[in-house]
Amino acid sequence: GENVEQHPSTLSVQEGDSAVIKCTYSDSASNYFPWYKQELGKGPQLIIDIRSNVGEKKDQRIAVTLNKTAKHFSLHITETQPEDSAVYFCAASMGGSQGNLIFGKGTKLSVKP
Amino acid sequence: GAVVSQHPSRVICKSGTSVKIECRSLDFQATTMFWYRQFPKQSLMLMATSNEGSKATYEQGVEKDKFLINHASLTLSTLTVTSAHPEDSSFYICSARRSSGRSDTQYFGPGTRLTVL
Image 1 (cartoon, rainbow over the protein chains, first blue to last red):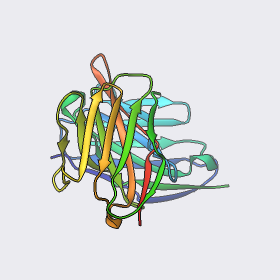
Image 2 (cartoon, rainbow over the protein chains, first blue to last red; image 1 turned 135 degrees about the vertical axis):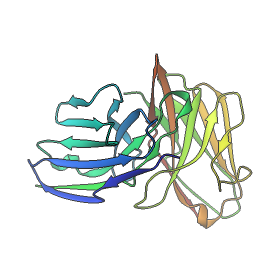
Image 3 (cartoon, one colour; image 1 turned 180 degrees about the vertical axis):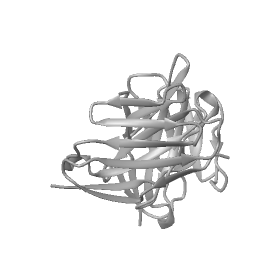
Image 4 (cartoon, rainbow over the protein chains, first blue to last red; image 1 turned 30 degrees about the vertical axis):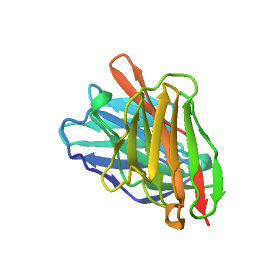
């Protein structure tokens, strides 16, 4: 079955710096890769996703890149702000009705003012 | 993004009682909903997949008689923790899958904090 590895487990950056979180997956059939942000005591919030037909997707300060050959994808946050502090989860699935999301273990991002 | 609600947000109950948690997709219909459990500082653990009009599919190690799931409509799934014990205390999160053409997206509810005394 699919296995998703996420690194680092914790990441501390200074406000205004960039943050990068990386994930690798094992099943080449996976074609859908969402990223979720979870604040303390709340449910995960979808912040960006990418499907296997594109290599990069950007939404304001957030971008995700996908390398299907190497089976890894990354989340990039630029100009970080204290409110970006949260736990971020990557996930992978085969998409559609066949695939359940397989989650990474999460990255706790701390943005210091 | 789509909206998924959960009720209650927090519940405290005595050992041996049953607790029902509701999950609703507010602005879309969801034939499939999911129930997750999350312990502190850990990732989400899928408990079961809830399909509208049919039996839920449980992950290995999850007791179907203890965690009863009902998905009676396209916008509502319920999880009932029967005969709850302190070890069932956890953060329970549901999600709903929204289908749009050839792509599916999963949206999560805000979670329910269950404390069993």
